[in-house]
Length: 381
Image (cartoon, rainbow, N blue to C red; front, side, top):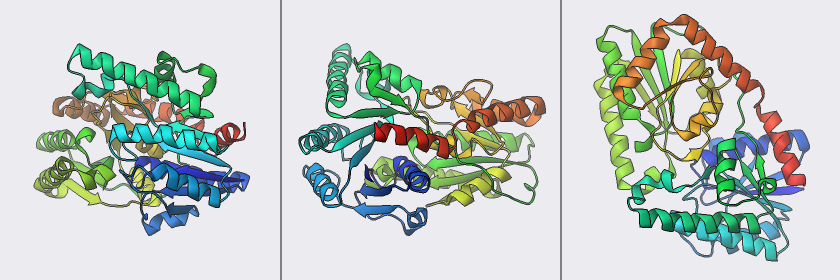
């Protein structure tokens, strides 16, 4: 069997797909292809997965290019790792997602879609300022998800909140499969964790990630005499390479981090899994102060879930859908609130240990080998 995954390069879904492919190959000896839009970093080749550049963004012929490659390569199943702007603008992406499904249907190829996010009018707050626009957006999304259900053989979502949102659009529950994001086994070993308290952030450096607020919260803690340091392991999203406002935000984060001198260390670029897990082990608290309201699931959270560290997250759908109050501290991504919750974890050892234990229990049921088994069941239906 050969499974072809459609995914955009330099994205969280690419990381997700690479990890899933490796697990499917190891457990079930299936052949996998990652069909992407551009050449990827050589570091990805270490996963043992074939990543092939086949299509281009903002190109109407992309579905035809994907289908041609899939047929020539003998793909039995095509899996679209959907995100809002994978093929270009969100509107263009959604048109091509449907067009690709139609082509595969006509060619009698099995096609599955993994919805890494489900859109709602409330999550698109920036463009839903009037009741008329909200109604129009609701109608368009309602049509889109019904067509998804019609043309795709199966739908995979990562949490119950996503399934609930799809059901509200009229998608039949029997068509929806909940498979959570995979968790890495955190077997990294480090000798000691150094002096003071290290706060770790990992993720794309984008305005929606709350990094400027986190930097200022750490600055306040340092001014209060807390021996604290912020480590930012930043990645570059494809949006950062395409938009001026994203680049400006990244430069501002770099500037503000430099102002803290040794209190803030920032590394931009590709970070291997080994490096990430080691930094998590060295850290005291992992903070993910995201601001967006998208109904998604956090890959970064699942990367660190098994590392035995307390986690602070913003009270947004992507975290509320995967965590409970006994597994993480929820907060608003403001300077004041981040300052308070980080300080409370530093001062309250009982609370810290309780959160670590709760998060570890959640991790045990989501290791990648377990997640891959669920994926294989859906693929083989």
